[in-house]
Image 1: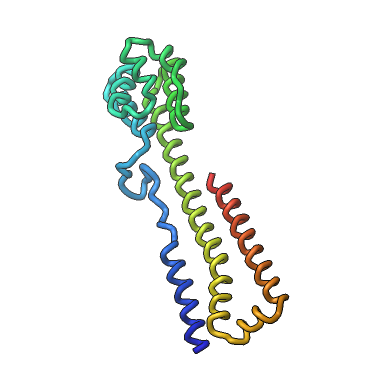
Image 2: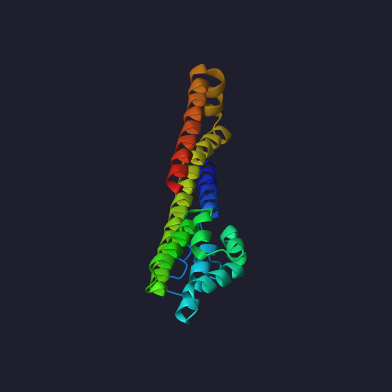
Length: 209
């Protein structure tokens, strides 16, 4: 009976680990080992559209305006300024990027507007930077999910074995009832287990950002 209960506990923990196992890392947007994801962030999509239009001969202002119209969630203030007839340099100065990706878009467009030259190549390099950044973020998310899984298993495993011992052993149940020290040790163990779980959760949250 004891062996069957032990095997049941191990099977439950293995099933839990399987259910909580993190999904495989998503392929980086635009990676060279396969087709690019269609669910691209707005900043990447805007720059890709601008780069494509620049390479076919469109001007920077026209390419930027058209790209922002195609992706209205990215830099809406910049789009409204350009639609209102503002100069590109003025509109970029007044733009308020929502995140680091949009800040890179604004900086790239500002550099292209000021220096000219091979603007398509500059925009293409900015796209590569955004893709690498997104791939790095996804890798960190996967690592954090794996760490959360480990923390969950390490937290639940002692509880599962403790419950198994209480359910299968009359001697353990009598010890908890008749010996105060066993009860105190159990409470301390539960407290330390909870503190360890909170500590690991805090560490994982810090590494995921």
